[in-house]
Length: 138
Image (tube, rainbow, N blue to C red):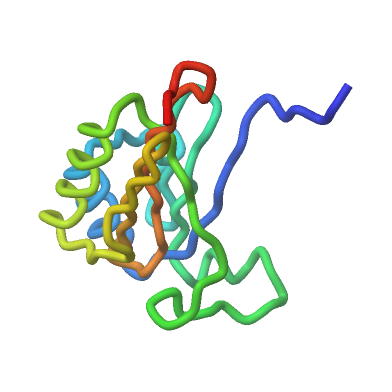
């Protein structure tokens, strides 16, 4: 049986925790306040996936590597599947209204529709909807 973790925690360095929480609240996410203090917060993505937002000095304490400036360099893309094309647009438009910036234009491949934004810390979030390939007709 393949390895299947029961929970996933994506750890991201942030410059300003309060501004980051305000931004993602406007996008529509919620936070687990039991795991929130001056150094970090736990943003709930779904029942088993969380984004841990850690202020940069606290994040640095977990690694010997130098942190990159996410506004200049890309280390990863965080992709979130949603239920509809309309939801893709809704989430990205909320992110842009909250102070995020476009990362790429909308991409429509017929069976898959995506759009991405950079959050206020420069991390790239790709929001996409993919139709069931068995029901999609080219």
